[in-house]
Amino acid sequence: MVNRKNENIVMPHLVRHLEEDLITRCCVPSGCLHNIVQGGDTISLDDLENTVKVICNNEQCDFGQYMHNDCFMSWEASVLTFLKSCGRARSWSEKQRLQNLWTKKGYDLAYKACGCQCSRGHIRKDLNWNPPKSDDAAKKKKKQQKAAVAPPSMAKKNEILAAVRNRANSLSSTGSTGSSASSGSGDSPNLDSTSPNNSFTTSFRRPSKGKSDFGGIEKSRNLSGGLFVRRPDFSSFNVLPKHKINSYHIKLEDETNHSNDETRNFILTSLAANKMSHVHCLLCATSLTVYDRFPLVDGTFFLSPRQHTKSCIKVNYEGKDEFLGALCMACLEGWTARLKCRWCSVPWDGSMLLLGTMYAYDVFAAAPCCYERLKCNNCSVQVITMEQQRCASFSAFSRNLTCPHCRTIDRHFIKPLPTIYIASIGEK
Image (tube, rainbow, N blue to C red; front, side, top):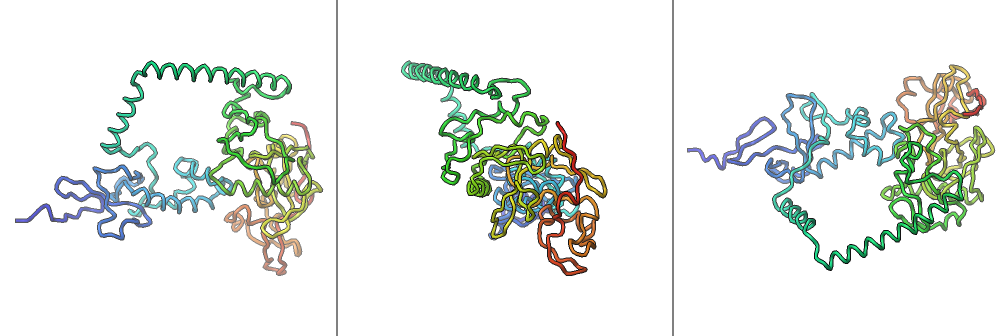
């Protein structure tokens, strides 16, 4: 007689029955991290608390639907690396890539890196699935909820009433201060307003003295010596279309991303060394105030090896001499200055650029529109083909490249603006 308890019955990739237990295998495409131990790649369907559910678009797939948390995070990191090199995602921040990855916006770009082990489909995270909690966790949560709704004692009631009075007094004094400040400034928006014009400012509290607007982060201003001011509100961005008034199009403070600090410190120290608290748009010459927190300016900064105008200042970035330039929000959106290619008449579009931060490449050279833009600066022969251009990243057009014809090493795609664009300056 066969002992069913010790028998290992193998089923196609997905599930094994061991008496009353139901077990599946971790379906991570990169290989389960727990497989170092025999049977370590298994997941009990009775205990899914520390797992992530995924969906394969192949209906006949039988390789499983669950991954260990750490296996999923390791695999997700590789998908994010792939997404970093894809189309419009190249201009996203790390936070934006992580937020967009499993939505249609990001997955449409990254699905090629999400191939399933069945070789006939692609997998994605199931955003509608929440891992079930264990019995102990459920009991603890229920106990906490019961304690939360328990009627307070008389002493507790007195404490609550006192706290409410203090809170009301505090709000009253803050409100009076805020109203006096608003009356002194004609264009400061009312942050409590629910009007459409204040849709962005209502999402954030006004920065208070001694505190940052983003999570109360405290950082010293020694780098700038107090040269740069704190942004009072975000009303200047209310002129943007509604779908752009968000953190995907406007750079905000993010205390979890250290590269943000490096970018901000680089810009502020470079401008402080030149004693500049304002910069000028290199297209329309509008004066732009530089702030000490993201968004740093009502526009964006960029680096180029060429000094397009005198408003671009010389800086040293990663050991190389570059020029730091700025473009205002109106010119990026095409409201004030409009540029079009001299040869193909395609307009330059800066509306896709993230506002308030800096790009480490020349934004005018980032997307050549025709073969004339791909010619060598020395022999005027095309350096790369249009097919190669489509596969290159935005920053690739700001790097040194050897011409295959005359062997000249140069940044061939960065040319004087008057030689490649026809500009028209007008009012919004």
